[in-house]
Amino acid sequence: MSRIVQKFGGTSVKDPDHIRRVAEIVAKTYKQNKEVVVVVSAMGQSTDELIELALQADPNPEPRELDVLLATGEQVSIAMLAIALRSMGLKARSFTGPQAGILTDDAHGFARIKTVHPTRLESSLRKGEIPVVAGFQGMNRNSELTTLGRGGSDTTAVALAAALKAECCDIYTDVEGVYTTDPRTVQSARKLGVVSYQEMLALASAGAQVLNARSVELAMNNSVPIRLRSTFLPDNAGTLVTTKDIAPVQTVCGVACDASRVWVRVAFSQSFNADQSVGEFADNFSKQEDAVQQLLSALISLGIDKETVCLTRSNGINVSWLEFHCEKRLLREVQSLLTISTSNLPDLEFRIDSDLALVSLIGLGIDSDYRISDNLAKVIRKNTIPVLMQTHQELRSSVLIPGAFKEEAVRLVHDEFCSRSVEAESKLAKMELEAEERALRNVSTANTNNALMFVAELGVSTADALESKEASYQTETEAIR
Ligand code: ADP
Ligand code: ASP
Ligand code: MG
Image (cartoon, rainbow, N blue to C red):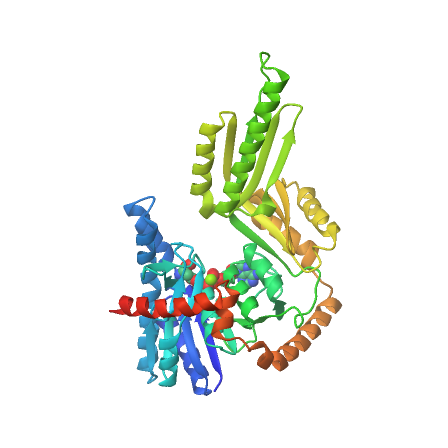
């Protein structure tokens, strides 16, 4: 019997009517003689509402307690969907992340799944049940609840698909698939029939919210095919996310926008003092250089992207500049690191701006053709939008611009790089159909993963995996009691 994981996002389960619609999709798949494991997000905007609630109690809520609070959102959804499925005569059973065997590291609020021990899900499937699992949550070695970061239910779904050796992970959402850019911003955005893991990872990391970046990484490492489809038009094909050998090769595949970046600029000045000898001056200068390097290493350990760092030294005026952009969630830590550095380096000054947007062009051809990056900045500047920084990462060229221009910039870049002639459009549609056929032929080979391989890909050795398997069984029973 084939096995499938189906994940439904917040808008798909926003109220009891929507939950019944989801239950019908699940029931239809189950009646096609498939084993179905369902993953759900919190209803509608409830995660945002829970965060808001916590902030009313404390502007800096304790991360452990915040996780306990946020995990309740998904817990409401699993119970609601299981109730709806049971009312239709199906044997459904809800599971929290820990009950489903999802073991994470200790990073509250942004935890990474380390292993999955789906024993209880396997036995539920053997009984002919439909397990309904809470997305976005797991537990660490100490049985503490953890959450996986915003959009983390996608990662739960892919991790379960890998651990349960499912043939596919279907992610149902409120759009019909992955588009060349957010279809809510650009109406002419085109749905991609098939896209490679690499391109999807670059799109997701650059801010395309439609799939969580960690889920794509996990799917790529474990050869889990993802099918992104609409809850509201569930019979449509959606977008298949698969290997590079199967997906059609395109120079540029889309445009993404991330409006949650902060831009950090640090200046270190070493003013000239007439009483200093040349030796003293050189000594001070080299101390400053060491301090800059130390600060940079500390920032990189915090998780800022190395590729966005720009370090400029100007010996003429003895000032060094350090510039980078990073995710807003790191803001507090970056700020406190810079404040500590100010006490060691009195000449250090910094400025943080947060109303910015990073607009990125994604494609397999971007790394090999520098003219694409060049044209990206030109298109933006030509329309008098200031480019504050330009950075390059794998398959991706990005410009940092003031936030107020984000929609205009996305439209301009999309028009310039993603519009195609009718002829090119139909050629691409044909290539996508062929890719889908190749994917169907590949299903059996793509699905060779097993739980231990999954663990190994996550960077845990087999020995560690077996050991933590024991540990997690214990912690799981403790948690359930
Ligand atoms: P869910 O709640 O189902 O997880 P999300 O809100 O996380 O859904 O993701 C779906 C949203 O992603 C869409 O409503 C769309 O506005 C946005 N989006 C951003 N970029 C893209 C893209 N390239 N293709 C499709 N949707 C996109
Ligand atoms: N409910 C969580 C969030 O809103 C997780 C998810 O939706 O995937 O981020
Ligand atoms: Mg999402």
